[in-house]
Length: 540
Image 1 (cartoon, rainbow, N blue to C red):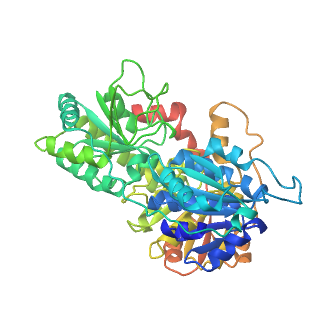
Image 2 (cartoon, one colour):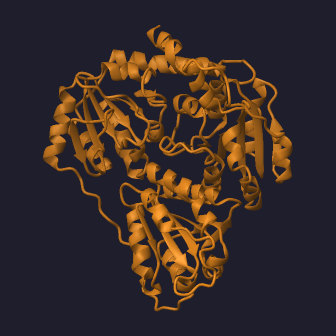
């Protein structure tokens, strides 16, 4: 019945590693239309389920046994909770009515999951499964989306009960009232230098893309985005100022410093702040599906809560006669473009991150996906990679967990087999879930994995250097990544010159199978991202 309830919700995949407590469910899945994707670690299964939720808006599902299997879901659960990704975790448990195994492998999994989910519950009666699944999916998918958890005891899973399912219903989102739209439009008209900041919430609903694009094209306003807001509006737009890779001292902050009104759309403070609010600064307006969580760096003076697409459809009509121009913002945009172009010309080897990003953008189609793990390169991709479409640069600026890059790319390829997909991982993050190469090969995925190798934890090294500390405790050795890939049945390559990378990547994207490309990378340029070097660049 549980499996039929999942089918009723439109679930197509379940990721995970079943245990003996899941065998009744596994048998039901065998006879269902749901595809079971067996991974090599539960964490990878969780990241894959979360990515399905992120891209579809529908709950992604993963399964594990009790005890250690369940604990391995905690990181993906936190990843989905902070990142706003609807996901369902199903964990097994020993029989609760009668068990001869004492406390073997038993911990309070539900209690463990409650702080990092929107809903966590042990199923104690089979007859309640239909209502529980419908309610859990509703909670997971409604704003702000996130993870839910079911613990399924072995004896409850065996119960035979009457089938009672509840059909999912479409929920209409409320629009902001006309009076408030007119008031917001008045604030925008009165501002001399308004800018618009697009956050993660804009990427969760497809209708926001059309509404925001039409609004910018109609009015001529300039916009920037947070890292998780990339691609909502095509970043080739002449009104795009850049992405906030940092919270301060980035090129976009030259525009922030001049603005007298900042309209922040779909932003959640779980994401690293795109700018730091201060008393006496410009007026900040919050537009989102839900009200703002206040803190010291984000305390908007005005809030408009409702359907984001509806707000900007109405604003486009209200401000249809508006034609905004700003020479100062145009100069900021040119500074951004010049900086990106400079990195694209860098011939140093090992490759600098900006050149890696430029070469990748040059061969990726507009609808291709680049899925980032977490590391120093994420800041360079956030700043330099111009996303042409919504959610085509998959990154995590919330939990910022390492190890998610490869699993997320695998989930993307499963959902969109006809589109090009690249996973970009540091050597540290790749090794945290590198065993999933076997899963990708077994699934027959056509996938490219780029490993940026600096033999260390590069982002923390950057922070260490920036704080004036000696280089210590953050270096390690690596396997031969070419041979490592080949042991899993993938094809391995190592870049030995700058000119090789773009051509090799393009060839791998157009061939079948899993391809792993090792790219030696030079992070000495990271000093350009912080401190005196960056401030001097911006001043000039």
